[in-house]
Amino acid sequence: MTSPMQDGRHAGTERRRQRVQDAIAAAVRDGTALTASAIAHAARVDRTFLYRHRDLLDNLHTASSRSTSPSPGSAPTVTTASLQADLANANARATRLAARVRHLEEHLSRQLGERAWHESGLSAPADIAELHAAVTHLEQRTVELSRDLEERQAELEAARAANRELTRALNQRG
Image (cartoon, rainbow, N blue to C red; front, side, top):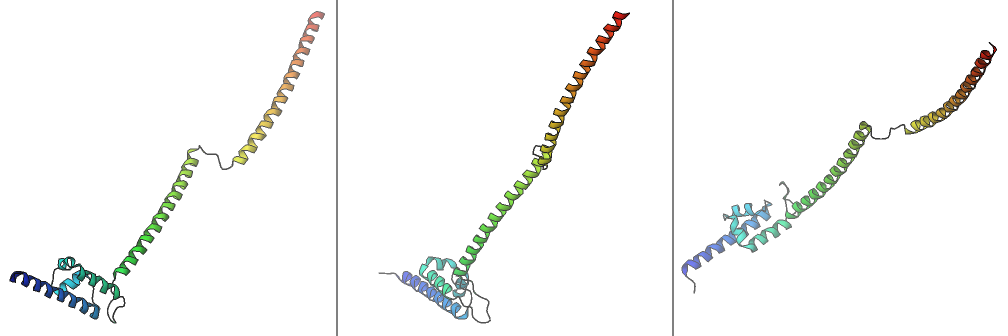
């Protein structure tokens, strides 16, 4: 047994439900926006009414996914599928851009590291082959000069010995 108050509330809910269904049908027919806010406004109900009655919200989503072709003279309607595709594309682009930024940061880091290494003087010079050749040449020259020095020292020793002999011979004569 229901009270007249409950019957009245039930009748009011049914009238609002019918207005929502009529607003969805009109929006599909006219090509207007199929959003919860637009339908609630057109049906003169609160948006929460749609969210409390999931079947009406499901009807709205179904209608919005079906109406993919815009009517002539109106702007294209945005559907859930198109928004999801746009979001997926934006996420993929963000991922690609993040990878590119990471790659460029690593490249820049390597370049700056190499420059700092060279400027610090700790790295091998770029003309290392020339330096190796110069070292080899200087080592050979050092060996030659050492031989010359030994020869000259031997000659000096011989000259000193000859000088001592001459000095002794002169001292014995006189």
